[in-house]
Length: 97
Length: 456
View 1 (cartoon, each protein chain N blue to C red):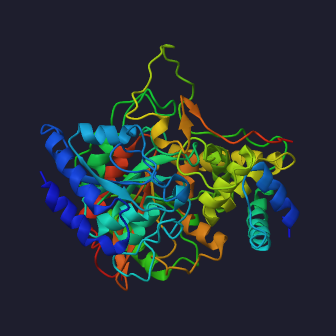
View 2 (view 1 turned 30 degrees about the vertical axis):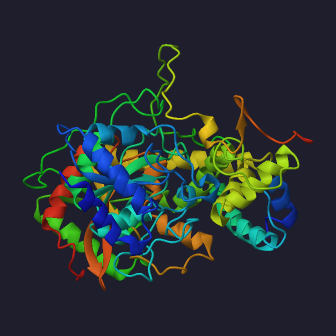
């Protein structure tokens, strides 16, 4: 398998996503199949391949740098899980490695 | 002008499909208010339109089919919704979909699967399955969906309705909850080409709030052509593989014959990188999704799930419990392909392959082909549960639709026949911003194709 249980755990940490221990073997198996499947893209030469393509306007259009807030029907107090005195309330920051 | 009560009654009759997420009581109240406020001069005055649940509306909750946004009420309307309202349309509720539009069967919704209107054991397609099912059931004449890899055309094909994905940049994405930003477009469903085209015309056009929306006037509706004289229709051979479902092939061949009878010139063409489209898509879309969905963390919107010892535990438990299995899988795949050491092997290569796929289309259009005709899907609607355990087989049901998203081209599905009662869709792929030509061809085919007959 191209993706191990440890790989899944490492990726899940990067993605800030809890993954159940029981779900790990199946996730590793399914991710391996997906990664092996997309590996056929190695048919594209690694060097000197074509330029990347993104659709949309050829150039970014600039507009006047005016403060022009979109009117909101409600503020974050209405839709945030915890909001107090103009701030989002979160638990203490903890350790970021 | 439809009466607000009649609109709600028709939607109530389709309740068994599990296609509508808005509670009927809320819907009735809102429709009465909207109906009283609608502009009688609008071009869509009184037309009820449902919207996929990943399109923000002031009226109803916008949950994206996910627990992580359960009960979320947007503080603004998506531009497409604001334009519909300004044209006098009634927003007739939010439709069930695969969570964050990730899926091809509408089985990946936190709010239960949507039933196919003609066979409850089957799926309506996805991810905009609720919108497709309600149009097919006759509950509304038109609906909004969204496309990242075929999420309007594939369910339109399965349900026997018209589904249009416009050119990337034709319709504003403001207020469409982002999944794969370089692929996403709002699309429309209609019972007829005309219903879908009218809605598309209203929602299209420039929007200063979306930098990827092109600075163009709204799409002008073409007239129904007398014939297809002068049209050169390309048939890409990669879309008619030997393993194509025989009934789908028969229906396509009949549609091609009918287009020839109307004067179209038909030519076989080749899009040689087609086989790489699904793997390309399943690198680019999850990569963009893993980045876009980082914002759902239990801090700013929606509910917060436990585990709040510190803020990281809060993120992880909210995301771990709030996202369903398919979304988790795609976030992990996206994070993997973007992670250090893998970026060049997967993400950069996928972007290069995307360029080759887009070039394939340009080569064909540069040689005088006006538009392409293909099957929309390799098979008619499949059974619920059939592909749930095998993500790749689910992904392959989008094999004929993802290319247009990768290349940013307009494409649409129209019903072209049935097999054992199940609808079959035919797809047109047009040139960028030439939706009008594509619609003309669709009008002409729709007029003559026996869409409700068995393909023979």
